[in-house]
Image (cartoon, rainbow, N blue to C red; front, side, top):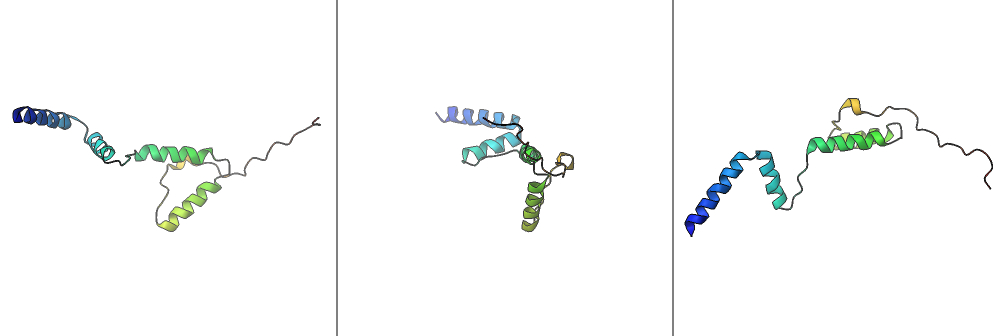
Length: 98
């Protein structure tokens, strides 16, 4: 019976050796209950969130200041930065409402 076990372990090791090391590490973390994430995808998601805000970049500046106070930086691409303009005013209703 130990021969079958050794053979199975050998096959598992051969499969792991052919796999991407990052994938194996993510699988190990997932097995331990930790949620692995892709930092590039996270940066992209934060960039999209900040670009979607219509506050003229006020939230981005506030976030950058808070991170600077903690000693960290917001290292997103500068090309994704929202324009710093006044927020759009609410459209006014015209006419009489009955």
